[in-house]
Image (cartoon, rainbow, N blue to C red; front, side, top):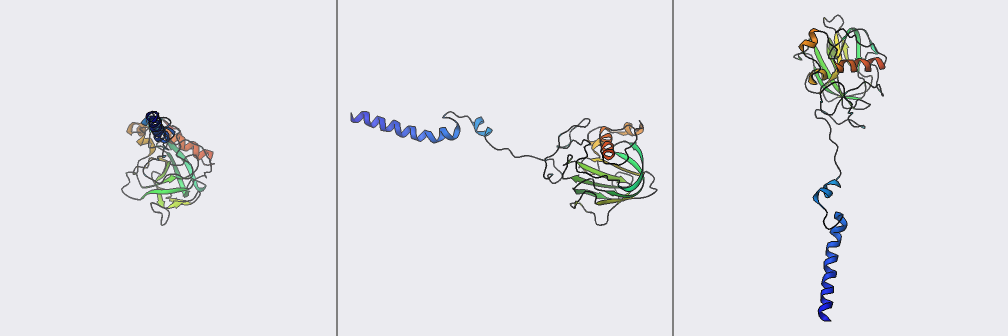
Length: 230
């Protein structure tokens, strides 16, 4: 009788010992895979700037190629016409959209400035880029290039609001200006980074998918779209 009682007590102690792990792990034989599945994943964002707030990066494709997590489309959202304070004549769509004219270029939406240079840009003139922080294209980059002067005191890291002046168009500049989707890597346009544009495209005035996308966005905001020439 005493031997049976001791065995019973020992079995009871062992069962109590494994019960907490069974509850926490979904069973005594719970696998490491099941444990990892319960972990909460941390969202990741494209490199080269601050994570957009309050919405995550968009993930809609345009043409071919991937650049981080940004795939610019052409939805107006809460954006404003970047050409509202300018008088321009639309020209060809290439990597972006070309214009000739004068006036001020404004930020499409709330953004952070990521690049500002007037020399050594690889473009015939200046290169200014900012990263949208909100709206349907949050996380995407926009550039203003060639015949533009940056707004006074515009610096990398500055936050700008929708409609805030970004640059002044230099009237009579030989190549005019170009605006479009940037890649967030130096002075490269999205179209070039995504291999939608090369020297042959330039020679034949081919309109890149990214250029068409940006032209459609400008048109949806009340600005003049570019011309498809190739």
